[in-house]
Image (cartoon, rainbow, N blue to C red; front, side, top):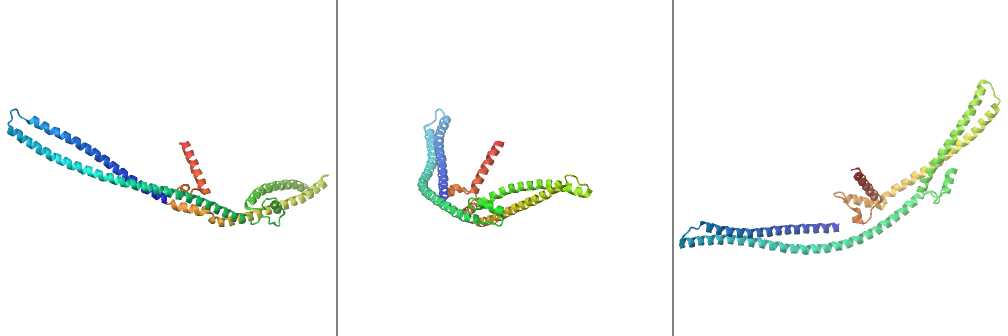
Length: 317
């Protein structure tokens, strides 16, 4: 803000100086034109006198005409000198004012240099404090994310997955395991569907034999396969059910941990920083990097999105 104020003051002084220089240039041009006009007017009076002169004029006429010309010339000359002196006086005052403004501009430039040095020092201090706050927030967030680390459940699959995790089940680890669990459950569904299809085949054969009273030679085998597949299918169903329970446990933990993180997000330095930037950009565009020396993740993302959009528009046009 101090730098912006200095730049505004310097711009005002520059505008005043430019106005003075423009005015003095106009005055110089006017003085030059007056001098030319005076020369042209003198020659015009002389031409009028010589063209109106008659041959054999008397001495009294010459004297009278001379006095008339001298009087007219004196009046014109006085008016010219007064105007010329007025312009020169005004020009002199403007140049004195310009000299004062130059001194003021030099003082403002010195003030700007000092403000720039303080600003750079403040940005370095702010960046260090910002990084320290980010570090503190990350420590707090890590504790919430690790709230369930190495905490076992009543589900064997969930416990098996947790034991294989390096940090015992942080939020990010749980999210990854849920993705893997989805694939495992998908495979379990396929296995169960295949078993169910095979079971239904033997089940229909046995039922058909009972309904018709015609028992083929394969009846005993078909019945044994039906019973065997039924047991396997039940085991597969329980296995699939256990896998789903394990995934539900992880989903519950994930959602709970995300809720903790959402609650502390307003305490993140970026939240306060972006609120300040939004307030400062209410009336005009605000450059956070120039003012503070760093950008938040959201600001960096928005910057690159705008840049890529400009590139796409340029390529389209």
